[in-house]
Length: 164
Image (cartoon, rainbow, N blue to C red; front, side, top):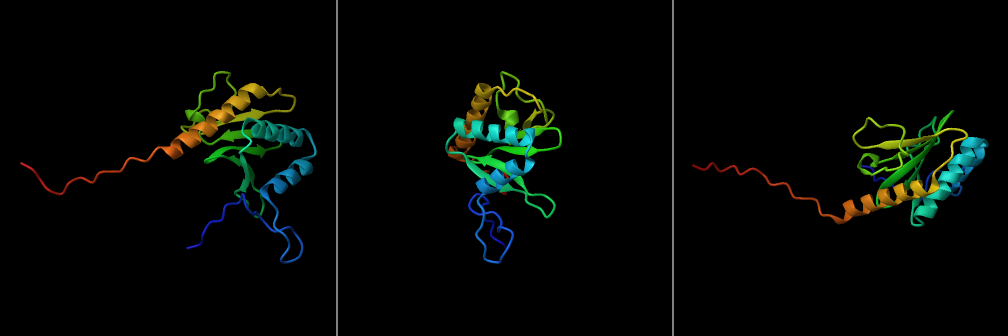
């Protein structure tokens, strides 16, 4: 069985020679923002800044790298908090446990039908409510950390002895 290596530490070799240095997830996200070069790159950079302002201990990762996909920026603290995906007409922040979060301002506007995830689609020209987004990020981190600190209940096996 192969051991999985967290992508936050090393990601993929820099194109070029064998034995080339390995890029960090942050460097890959930087390159992605630069490569986009339009409103999506600026929006992803802004969202990334808000995420780190809300939680300076946030870890950047790149997950789900495939031959035809550079992977997805992932922001984690005690588990996945959210992703920062870019599409042709939208920058999407998907919160891994968004359905469990209170969203009094109504930032979630996508993936509302699921039982676990919720997303925020940001379109060109949309104004980001930074205060509400920071609150949502902090709540997601708190949810992750609270779930980590609680021991999971042990399942009891049904007794094979019959009574009575």
